[in-house]
Length: 146
Image 1 (cartoon, rainbow, N blue to C red):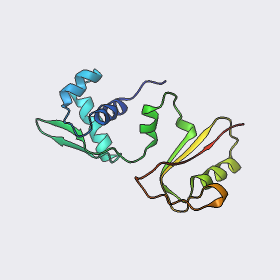
Image 2 (cartoon, rainbow, N blue to C red):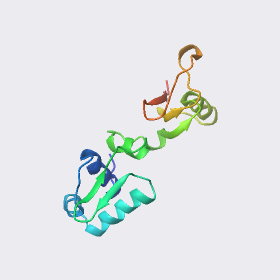
Image 3 (cartoon, rainbow, N blue to C red):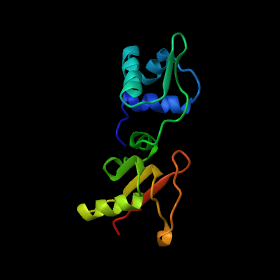
Image 4 (cartoon, helix red, strand yellow):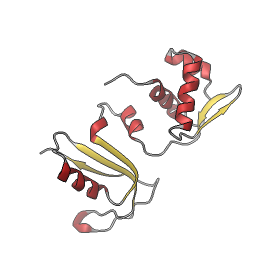
């Protein structure tokens, strides 16, 4: 597995200590980086990637709720990096439709996964409609090479 970035390590610490204040000094010492590096990582996560991180003077940082579905978070927890084979979306019509479209344009040489937080027109076996609202389930399709 590749080395995790400082942002990934910070997210992992915050997720592990959900709803708990963690000081920047603690994070800097644990990750063996400067306090400024932690500050930059936190600001990047908050401002560029919309993580719900709260900061308070003399308390530190806290992640109130687990963030939305995101490929980076899935890769942090996976034992093998999926990167190019993992496609994550907030909302799609159907993960199966995405898989079909993808396979018509690409040669599949490794298992490929399509994951969504919400499907607007999801379907299952025999074309049966699947109710797929956000934040209540995990909707995915896996394409294998066999």
